[in-house]
Amino acid sequence: MAFELPPLPYAENALAGAGMCQETLELHHDKHHQAYVTALNGFVESKPELAGKTLEEIIAFSYGKPEIAPVFNNAGQHWNHILFWKNLSPKGGQIPTGLEKKIAEDFGSVEEFKKLFKQAATTQFGSGWAWLVLDKTGKLAVTKTANGSNPLAEGQGKALLGLDVWEHAYYLDFRNRRPDYITNYLDKLANYEFAEAELKSA
Image (spheres, helix red, strand yellow):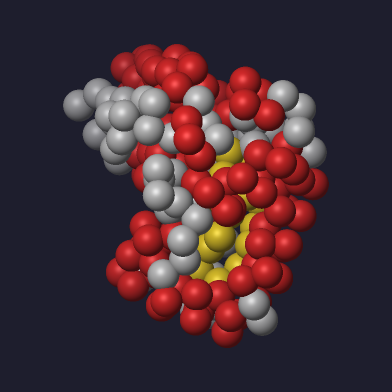
């Protein structure tokens, strides 16, 4: 069965008031994410070794293999964006009590978490992602990955939040001001309720 572009869980203009315009979502979801899905399906059709594998299995199979790097890049980006759309909310920025308590326990404070997340997202050179993960020891951690890689591939833990810092994710809204995009995400767009639900299900 071919992989498919998932629908957005909100209208394409739903995030405009929180700093992500309709044109950004149309281009990012309908064009960029669709391109990753289309390319991935092409690889699955042409490579028998990928037949019948889940997205997660393809990511694990192709990670660290330069000869099939395009497979990994497109599979990774499909997985990353599935999570990313769920990470955004028109009512984002409000941290529920359970997650706030866990953040305070593991980072010291919400402010420290946001500082570390912003540092990771800002210092990811070129394209990539910043993540809030639940690591293998049961603690929250902030990580970053390059290009289309992710915590699943790199064994960093379970991803609770992931922020796309490829320039196409924010250029229409913030031009080259990546730090402003990150702050806006943390304060107005991040779906912390989704992150808390993922934490509880871990």
